[in-house]
Length: 558
Image 1 (spheres, rainbow, N blue to C red):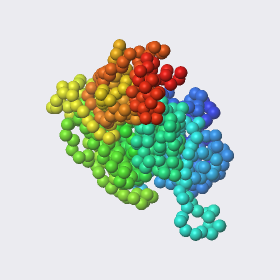
Image 2: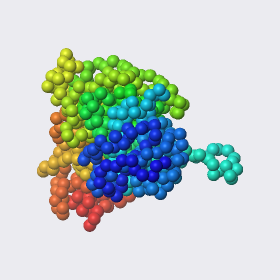
Image 3: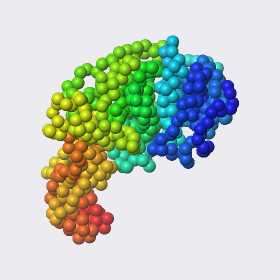
Image 4: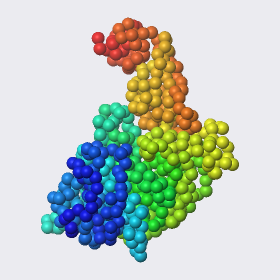
């Protein structure tokens, strides 16, 4: 394996990128790196300035991954991208060799450069170059300051000799979800707990606990919460990579679609018209990802691994995506069953893999992709942060349809002519209902809402609660903190969210003002609630609370 870089771009920084090139990619990787421009919007948490990107010529990595150990000690301070035709199929072995060479797991990126048996990577240089540049940007965007939690597979449930114990291959480490309290703005709202399909997350006071043994690394928590990471991955890293895929495809005439692919699915061979965006599983994906890519004018597809939960997620996302497009006039109100559903066997995976395109009539696995005609997003690029991802894309699609540029909407009812509502368990926005008869005007829902979707206005003798659905992520923090169970939350997207404004949801009598702090007597812990709970055990205090001219907080702190 060569020891000297064969190409380099950018000024040196503390954390350079090295693209290790297998012989089967020829000079494609070097050309891709030489031509790339790292977008200025990409977050580079551990970089000062633009990172240096080198290319290192190697031997046939996919045939002998262990040869990477020759780089022991030389790549320890680098982020490594492996450009290899069969590297994605051999990613576990390659990653294991790099770890033994001193490269941490969170600094390794292996893009899918798969080619058909009779094809070559060089024959699809443009597409391969895009995939390599996207991988470099993913490597750049990784926040290596966050510690990584991993678990390895358990060993065989049988007796083995002591010598054999050292030869057991436990496979690649499995990333485990990590809650980062510094990023949590909701005082542990429990949205990630609700999203986890295996119950690996639990709320303990104002913190989240992750059961590392139960966590499967599916990434469902990433789709609901910006405070969670999975190994080296976060929503921001996927967003950065997708931004490159979309931008490069548009510069190439939008001839490539983006296929959001479960990491357990078969590789997507070059030449099929799809640029893969690999995710831990489709549980990490929200409908806003699909809508953002579609609004940028590209076809978008979902590829599941065939596992029932992943396949169900694909179907549910496809349905919600189609319903929302139809609602804003970006597609016919009745969509045919998506074409392109098929199965093919991958020799490396050993599983048949369902492939399903969900957008623009595109057929996954076909060389032809039909991009969705929609107004491109602004210069800020893609955003996968919900609920803004969904609502921003829908506004762009509706504006394009209103301008009369969407042929699919020409014969349908004009967007905005009638209100619409789409309810789904995967909807990224929510709507709340407050039972004014049960509300004690305590204001805890306003205090604990992480997005300021709930607001209050104090008037003499009355508290008015307002709600802006465009800010609501349906995290349920308001409902969980309400001492009286007066709030219910439902997941839905409706037409009012495209023209957001605060709407009054409850008017509650608030009583007199506290003589000490001047706040309504219902502020803090509600008087009646506290008195009722203390009536049996502390009747004197309960009576004092009910007759006092101070709020509960002032009384209890006196």
